[in-house]
Image 1 (tube, helix red, strand yellow):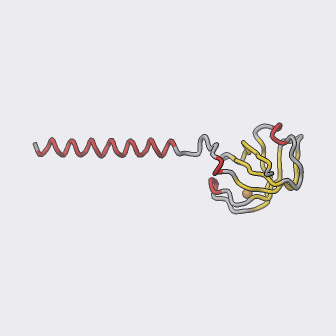
Image 2 (cartoon, rainbow, N blue to C red; image 1 turned 180 degrees about the vertical axis):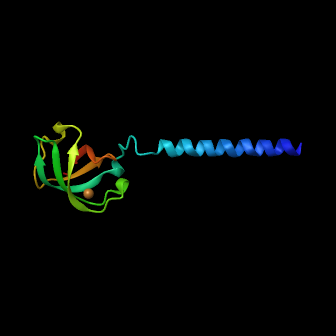
Image 3 (cartoon, helix red, strand yellow; image 1 turned 45 degrees about the horizontal axis):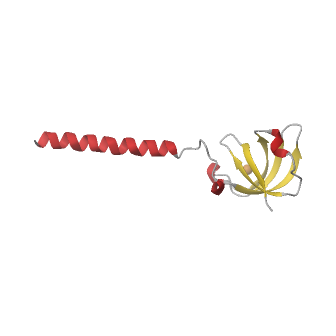
Length: 106
Ligand SMILES: [Cu+2]
């Protein structure tokens, strides 16, 4: 009877920890398409040919990166269409510093 209780407790702890790791995985860096994760920036330079953009960006919380001016690659060059130097934008970047989404501020 006592042993049975210990076994039950163990399997309960196992289930809870399993549940916890699944939820950690679900909130990992993959699929970061959340508006609240977007970072504000000003466009300093656009290189449409090479698919890069120089941004003066605010802190990027998902990457633990402070504000700075730096060059990013864009995942898809068509993202650079209709953008100009001096525009202010919201952008989303993946863990390898590729920009996956850009939205012009109104
Ligand atoms: Cu940076």
